[in-house]
Image (cartoon, rainbow, N blue to C red; front, side):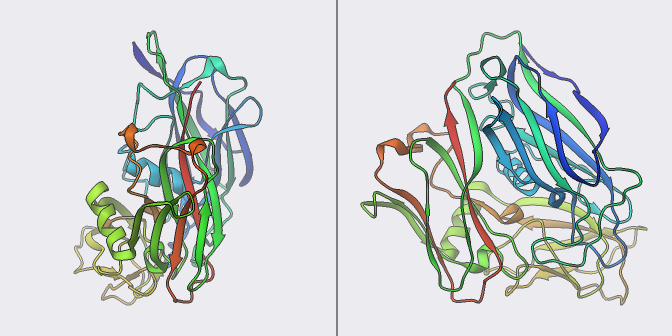
Length: 379
């Protein structure tokens, strides 16, 4: 038994600066995950650190049988899930938004964790498996941050793709994990929204995401609740502070290093978010050229965006290390435990099932709040 990891595409140029790229997968074998790398040269000049490669991957889908969705996620959602799944890879060039080549690694995982032998997609039981990437490298803004630059067209952005296939084994998977967005709504001050979860699937994971300039999830959230059968059972209802504390207990802090070129006092999007109870979220490791600067900056409590506090008056390349929670504004709701089947919810047995979000009275009107779900799909 072994995992075969072999390129099906290597350094393949995208069909253009925006569009849809479709990659056929092998038609047999047990698929544990699809690893892919995207590479492009940043159009960044001094003071324009707002757009990243993952922002340009608007949708990544794994489709079988022509239209059946197995995975449907954005680039930033894949990276966030990889952190929760403990399979995030931090390459020195992954978060390097200066005038050089940026390279980011993504893992589209069919199991609960990296190389999960219980949950894989049996490609022999489906037809026409393929990955579809909807991309746009012309973006110069994202989620309300508008000081970015489009990626360069020379060289043309490119990608590589490697399916991880279990070969020569007697393993029979129990199924695979489907992940997709199941609900969204537009943020509003003092809004109370019941995010209805479709009944039928067996759920083993739920995620809440909101990411927008000045309207981070931990800013707008007042209470979060898991509600079953129209209030008959409410196993989880906490306020913002307790929610953030439980996230840190369950999943710990995440760490992301990046090289960036901000202008002093410029605000730009952080890869991680923290709760209102904290300010310090990053420290300087080094600047390009080997000069170590003093303490770097903090997370603005009222905006959840990083503001650089360099003592200089001009932009300079800086290496930063971020430590916090909520990668890319995504929180794994700490009620279902994907490693403990006793906590999973078989929704076909329920009358109603929703996640209730209650927002603060702050003026948060631009963000889109999303609910993602992991579903256990038998094959």
